Amino acid sequence: MDTTIGIIGGSGLYEMTELTDREERRVDTPFGEPSGPYHLGTLRGRRVAFLARHGAGHRHLPSELNFRANIFGFKVLGVRWILSASAVGSLREEIKPLDIVLPDQFIDRTRGRISTFFGDGLAAHVGFARPLCPALSALVHEAGHAVGATVHRGGTYVCMEGPQFSTLAESNLYRSWGAHVIGMTNLQEAKLAREAEICYATLALVTDYDCWHEGHDEVTVEMIVANLAQNARTAQQMIADTVGRLPIGRTCECATALATAIITRPDTIPEHVKRRLAPLVGKYVK
Image 1: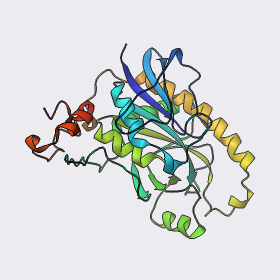
Image 2 (image 1 turned 120 degrees about the vertical axis):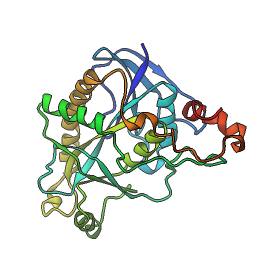
Image 3 (image 1 turned 60 degrees about the horizontal axis):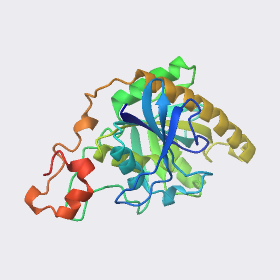
């Protein structure tokens, strides 16, 4: 059975308890080591690969993550869909702790993170107007209702550098921009998944209000940890339900994102670059 579904677990979601027939797989990539081994298994009758974004024991800061290795590893494993879960802060009163947001847009507030597989003699520019797969997000939304979660479909995710949280001025600025949640990880994953022609959707798990909220001083570490644990349980249910809903084939634009994106003349692309990126560009560049 092919492993076509990838799951990235974020803060509080370090494993999928429903996985059966488990095996651990380490994947070598030309971009270094992923966050850890991939845990392959069967979920709702489908073969999936789970990766703990921050490593075992949550060892890696958001800025330390090797996003390229993580996504390339999924591509090598044959993954065509990625379901991502991550903790976020809310920038809107109506988006409450323990709610789940399915963003459809990003604002980039990171600095110096590598967000592309390309360069070194091969230029490509994928479309990113709709940075998350609408078809996959729709299935996640259906799954959220099926398991009784409070789900907000659509919204803008501010991806900040961290590891510190926002200043009050920044938090209010993001609210004035119309943003909905703030986190530190998902944008690079979405960009790289698009370049790898992998459908990507994220479950933004709200643990608390960002510091703009007048009650933010009442938030304690214990409260956040408790919310993380509850969010993780809900996310596992939603992800499992989504896996059961996934079709076999794809008709979305994600599946052919590179078809018109590569602009370098094939005969000028260095051979070592063709070899390195063969899992991504092999069907387009010979």
